[in-house]
Image (cartoon, rainbow, N blue to C red; front, side):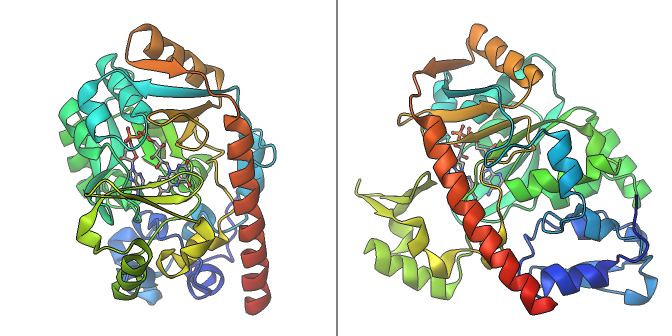
Length: 364
Ligand SMILES: Cc1cc2nc3c(=O)[nH]c(=O)nc-3n(C[C@H](O)[C@H](O)[C@H](O)COP(=O)(O)OP(=O)(O)OC[C@H]3O[C@@H](n4cnc5c(N)ncnc54)[C@H](O)[C@@H]3O)c2cc1C
């Protein structure tokens, strides 16, 4: 299955140099020659540290969410149908826990479901992103309810959680990994992530790369795009919202980008008008609905205070029903949700395909 001709050089040429790297850091974290210091992260981008030691086995290339080689296999495995993938149900759900409701992004269905999975010992922990500020987060393996609460809510910035899964690898850095995984004693891990993160993990699972097998339940966030807040971006957004960034209470992304200020005012900005703060690599992505996750979630299509939840398998459907029956989640009517998700997915796919085709022309 592994193509000998592929290496990090190919990845650099086709993905990093054209500016479409998703910065999930799967390539750096799961490099077969990890102990030989082949790859590193330089200015937020994967780079060679010691090119001489590259084994050229192509793992880094194959697991990248922006390379096409495993896409067909992934789409077949998850019975992909255009444009939002295979699903069994679309529901509007929210947590019944007030502590979660106070800090979550939409309806807290993600954190509520994780609470249920932890309480019923269906998972040992969850690989999440702990919000530091709305523009900044750190990966965290949540092991209890207190940890889940620290991670609830969305931070609109690249999460490095796939990199953190690398600390659990037994693929290359055996000793470091054994130490950390035995400390944590995790064999069943839920993973919450954007489409690029979930697809990296799914590609690793196709190739049986350790420790992707412990990602036993994946919750995929809908994602139109993600953001990079630098000086230029800060100036741009300050102008758009008519207030300084420290006046922001909450940012959310559904069909548009909304900014709630501390004075209670809410500004809505069209997604096409966010150019300077959008991560350039996100505009080359075609997956809005996170088609390879076990369940996919977002705010679009649900009443305020609820999360839209797509169950993509019978097992996921059963878990959601159980979480409702046991009082962790509750449901509201969600008419028209599907149409809205569909429209967002078509819009993103069209943009991504155009950008991808342009980049391909540039490198060929
Ligand atoms: C970058 C980004 C873009 C999004 N774009 C859209 C969109 O266009 N349309 C839409 O309807 N919904 C979008 N969402 C999803 C939406 O913002 C909510 O996360 C989702 O509705 C779940 O809400 P909740 O209240 O159930 O989650 P909560 O219970 O609040 O839990 C949120 C979970 O998301 C994880 N998380 C937070 N930030 C990140 C991050 N940067 N990367 C990875 N994981 C993270 C946390 O670890 C936590 O487990 C986006 C989310 C993100 C992070």
